[in-house]
Length: 558
Image (tube, rainbow, N blue to C red):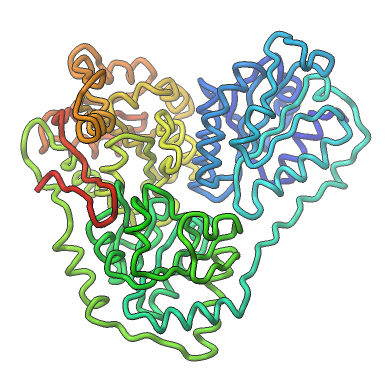
């Protein structure tokens, strides 16, 4: 069999049913095998970066891996941002790039670039395969690497003559490697519970690792067993229902919420499950850590003590750690009574909730999120990339189910939104809509992927908050440096016609000027059988709440 035929068979054995990519001369041998593999549906994207974002969001929405494919040279280098975006958010996917023939490697041949070396710092692992017989072993290792431990994207670079080589291998001999999840040390679990029960005001911090391990229900069971307020990181948004009495919202200096920051600020112990304590969440780490102890559970040993020193560090899969906590609680019949703090969480949530009920014109951006919360149900998926639109989305959107809120968290990648919405709907088999929440400037990044959605009858929705500014950069310039330069884009409301752009790509849409018109426009988008763009013309210089620490977030709107 040819290497390409073997690769196609391996992909099927590893459970791959969907691939996103762009064929080219450097990868056409592999595409010839995929062409004979009807069990894998291939979607032709319009940009290689978008192929990776689609495969990324496919996993976020479903927990199943997908493949991104591209040709050599600039096709491969266009993969870089997508791979970095997936890696920093711990999203597993397989990226495959075509390459020049082996004899041309290192000789500056046409479209010959060492993409394995380029991506090495930003992927979980990379390979350039120069020995055809190593293909089965490398693919086995690649899938296992992507899925095991802290998951992430892997890249395999395939010289063209390797793709065409014949090797002696039977697909009957191929078996995926099982993924072994690390279990926690029982003594550390017992010690952690002792520390938890001795605390006066403990909180449970649910991180994205809880979602990745599929342990959100067990996590909620743990919170209920010990009456622990649950604060979610941005990557765990939707990990528990908004209405749950122990839901204490987000904490953080940008996408945080007043209730999350207040509850965390008053805590004397934090049980961090599957979280990384990154800067957007913690802000000033001295303020964040002062006066409280930390129990940190993470599957990756290097994450323990990397940012916040842990009183107890537990290297384990979040799901297995939670089950160990629950087993110990049941075995020893441990409990913790709800106090006034826990009983008053929902009242506190209501009293601290930021306003969205603005009726001014131009539209206040927060008003858009009020309509989003009213129109879309709990099964709707949302993607967002970067900007004040993302910060407002994190602050104001109400998400009550896991794998429904799919942001570019660690990278903040402009252009992630639309291809991610496409990949999410493919993974979800178009059962539910995906909504890309974007700014006017961000809309122009990878906007061509609307054509992919239209041509594949994937009726995603794009909501544009058009304030004619690079608004996050404007706010940073204003408050950090005291100036404004190269951030105002009035042409985005005047010269530019985003609805005509959408229609040119086979989509539909409308422009909204009145607050009362937002919800009806979203309803029409929801009913549309085409991709649909709702452009909300917003107030230009609205600021988003943020600050340097969880106790110093500046609120701008009341």
